[in-house]
Image (cartoon, rainbow, N blue to C red; front, side):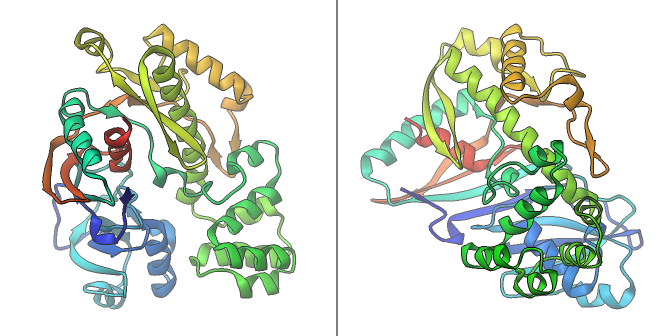
Length: 379
């Protein structure tokens, strides 16, 4: 079974109502990309046109191994740069200018995403099982775990960067961050060059000006802590978001395996669990369940969730003092609520063959198609 065997197998289009003008502080573009993740494309735009990365805003991260369309907004463009960007094209991405607004884009600031996804290398029985599973997911939704895109800063790292920051281990935190961006071969070269910043700059992978400036700050003698502050705030915030997403996933995972019949499936360095069977009357009690990130500003209404959050935070060694921690100019922990279940709209089979099935559906902001697919194949 293969998901994302080729980019054309995973098509994503961001859905957002735009109200644009002829003038404004932010220039809006439709970004079409293929085999590139959102952050890497923004880094290229930042580097190629000398635009501060913090001036480029977006509503959501889109998959790398896919063909995607999404909106970005760029602050303070001069006429010359705007003209270059209006219909800019590179091998794996293109920009189309749409108009202006005085509002930036914020994470989650869109109505949803439309997907067309092909799952390949399937046996006929598996295709049949997926089709049989669709009515269950249409009725009961799927567990709303954070997906792979949320964990970009830890996928190739040993641990979450936040954990190093909490121990004031700024050099280890920076090393994890910079080395996690390179491929395996380049990672070896960067490890060898670590501390020799002239050599390190030569072997670094293409990054935004911010990461290069961060290493140049070390070269000038700045501390690792101060050099970190060169990174735009939105990148520093991603360190915190990544760890909090892991904690939230752990709450939901624990809830599922503790109280329901479930199946498990691998997920990055961990695993996810999905409800396999449930009675209507039980689901009616939990379908609108919201799980808080910490339970401080949003006390959990369900005592089961309250116990799980307490257990997970204790297991991770997170105390009340740690919850208030600020590092690198950002608050590391913030409370929020997230629905435990997401419900796809218009989930249907577009096409199928002897060894593949093509699905289409729309998901609300913050929900992940890869998680929905894991639910469908977790039998």
